[in-house]
Every structure is written in structure tokens, then in C-alpha cells.
Image 1 (cartoon, rainbow, N blue to C red):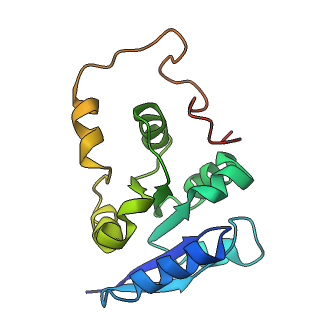
Image 2: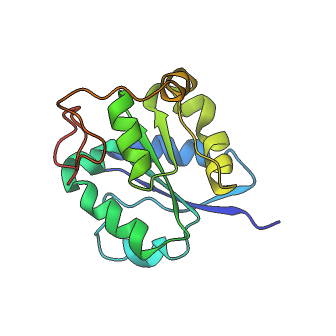
Length: 160
């Protein structure tokens, strides 16, 4: 069986190195690149060979979600996993609706990164269990957060 090709993207060097250290511990996962941003020269070529791209939320804060959206539209075979410091129901729902296959809390990266990559590559969605239950309940919209809103209201910077 072919190994899963992974690219880890973060503007933070320590996060890129941590991701790399965790990925190489898995014999069925190959780390193919560690770019500091999505639109950097050569990053798009690497993405054409990527099965799962792990994106640190620092990229979303620096470059906006438009770069991720373009990547997902251009490379439709790529599955994206976003690592976030904090996750709200609204932000997670919005992120998944945008085509991202998984969201992983930064505090859970050591325990679950390899498993999340495998599950996302297999076509599953990955999210923290505590949020699954809240998503199973009927959607209750607040007047300030209608479904389909362009960006999450969690203050993650310029995602649009």
C-alpha cells in the first residue's frame, strides 16, 4: 500500500518542526514538505504530490482563508487538516463547510496527528469528540451568526 504524502504548513518554525517530528514517527506517512506559507514559490508544486496538508492556524491568520480555499479548489484530491489553538462550534462548522476535512486542537497534536492524517486520507472527517455531540444537536442560530456566513465570528483574523 502506498504511503500517505503529507505537507505541513506553518508560519511558525517550532510548529513545523513539531509536526515533522510527529509525522516521521509513522512508517506509513511520508513528510514531503514543510513550507512556511501556502503561496511561497514551490509550495503549489509540492501540493500536487500531497495527499493530506496539515495547516497551522497561523497560516489562516497571516494569509487568510482565501489561500486555503484556492488550494482546495485547485487540488481537489488534497484533504486538509487545520491545527487550531482553540475551537468554537461556529468556527469548526464554518471550516468544515468550506471543505476542510479535519480540525485538530493543538493540545492534541502529539496524541492524534498520525491517526487524524490516516482518517482524513481514508475520507473521514476529523474533529474533537466534545464538539461532535454539540453538532449532533439541532442547529440553533443566533441572529448574529446565520448559516452560510462568509467568515467565523471567533476572531481568527482575516479568513476571507
